[in-house]
Image 1: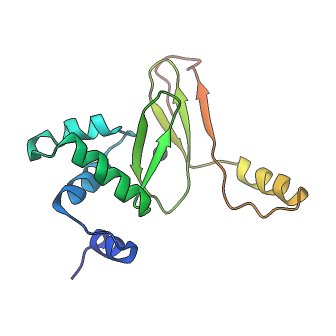
Image 2: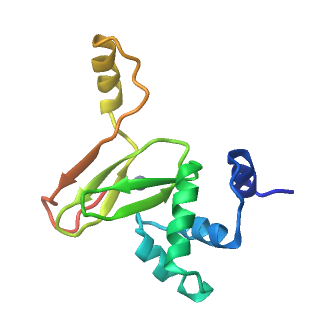
Amino acid sequence: MASALEQACRERGVRLSLQRRIILEVLQTAEDHPCAADLHQRIAGHGISVATVYRALNSLAEAGLLVRRDFGDGKARYERTQAQRHDHLIDLRSGKIIELSDCRLAPLLQAVADRLGYRLVGYRMDLFGEPVSPGVYP
Ligand SMILES: [Zn+2]
């Protein structure tokens, strides 16, 4: 029986090579949003070249299995595509990226689009902030 990952790859017409499987599994368990260099470091024991990591990331992102993020630090960062959308808050002091899944702005943005005569199909939002009290995260 095919795993959910194999099924998702088949549906998107992507061959699930060993390298891609390793990258997807590392991203599945990552609690941050690693860049290609971070990923290459994390899979160092598998003998996968950095060029292969970049190619795999591009293919998986094109297929919709990964999402490429740009948080303004000059690095493309990656995460697995999730069923539910989320936004991010970037801590400018520590660089920590906090996921926000409870965005109450969505209905407001939909109302703005409605008023302008558009059906909202998506939006991107990243918040950048500094902690008011050090060490306090949701
Ligand atoms: Zn995220």
